[in-house]
Image (cartoon, rainbow, N blue to C red; front, side, top):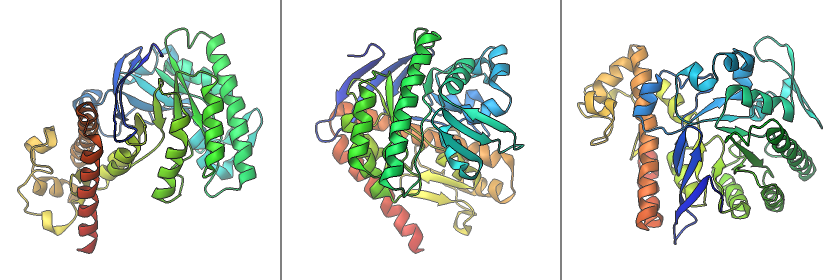
Length: 382
């Protein structure tokens, strides 16, 4: 059993797990959602407001923070926690996905990825040594290895190359983190299993990385354009072959129903820009689906976004007022809707943990998903 991750309860009807992950900046109760703070900020919220949503850990981005303001500057100013005023755990991704999304600006080589900055076109390089050095400079509680994320769809040959290269890079990242004292200092490094839509390659990636004994494991290369059933199939093809006594993280997704479905497949950690992005576009999550506050039907609506949900936005403001802010393009709309949406996600995680403990996660999550998806379908018909 790993010393940093406790598996507290497993669900009998699904593969859902209730756990506790120890980090340098405190414990994390899983399953958990991580708000995304790409540039060292969760957009429109202060660190105190992030805490108010129930967030236990946030995510920062290696690629963006190294371009601007630079990881050495962050290191010299006390590390990312001090720099951004957040005293909880921070996970940083390796920057590999951003480079994947810059397909026209990058060249994948055996030793890393050469690419052009999206800011000014300057030539840059990310390999195992670079990403581990950057994340050490940032002082990440959890650092991700660099990997190659194959596109969807892709050929088996291209996927085979990406899996092999990602394995070699993971080996190098772990060795570098060991040599520079990063792992010995209590930081964690998570490996990333690729494999696209090829179940056997996903199993091979998960098993070969498991043999390297990382502190945690991630499912990578999902939600890159494939339909939801295919995405869930990929997650289900990967998690059974990850160590049961280590945390499992699916990167970069998803909607509330998708997250509950992935908890049922044995995933512990999630991140996504979805709740913050839709907030900036005037939309809010409810148990009956996403509502667009630009709709005329909310102009005089005196109800809170969600009756009985205990967050600042729901306690203090009506849908009518929030719609007014959205229509007037007031900055406060972004803050109040982001507060609500993140709290909605994190409250859902708290409910999931409670139902895993109670032993009824299976029927509870299926009923929750059914209600949410029925509300979404009804809204589309109107």
